[in-house]
Length: 232
Image (cartoon, rainbow, N blue to C red; front, side, top):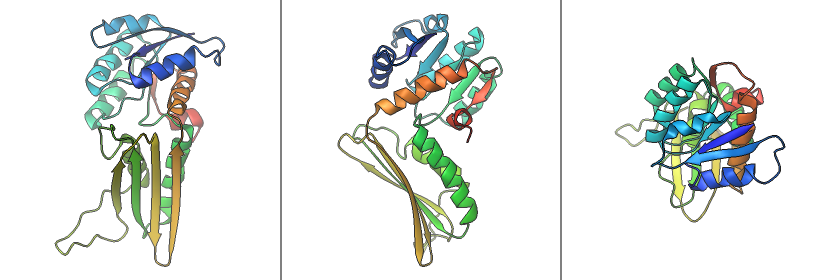
């Protein structure tokens, strides 16, 4: 199975190449990649494509995947609701898996957050995320994914500065070379529940994406997530 990497000279792209060339994936190989000056259509001669680029580039790649009916795994950050709708539309012609985070642990965390939120309706929820100093989006796509899993809207502050009970808030920290840390705290009266995940090595995102690409090639056209892959 040949896998192409969009943006293969970027930080995540290089990590994916190293993983594919590590010998840890019998039957898989690095087909080749593109940078912004290349013709992105070249990617789709491979059996599957992995894309960790920019929203602008990814918007082109999803429709090329649909045109060529090739599986594509998307881990690009900064995608918006319109982009998500377009992914669903393109997935009518290809197998497409999108996740704001390719970590197995983070996706299990999202499932646990969903369960906890449904049972702790009167608890306040606060999501704290920490990333390296060069992280662009804030809150991160992962924090927003966890927020979506709560099923609640971000808290509005009234004129007195108070927040309504049972609402959701975000806190962001940036610094150093932190790969990614996410904590979801449920604050009740007299008790607090905390669920968290810490990424110690960014290679775990590459491993998750490659695992997703392997899984996706066996699937019919449609839109998938890491939680689908994990059966969560």
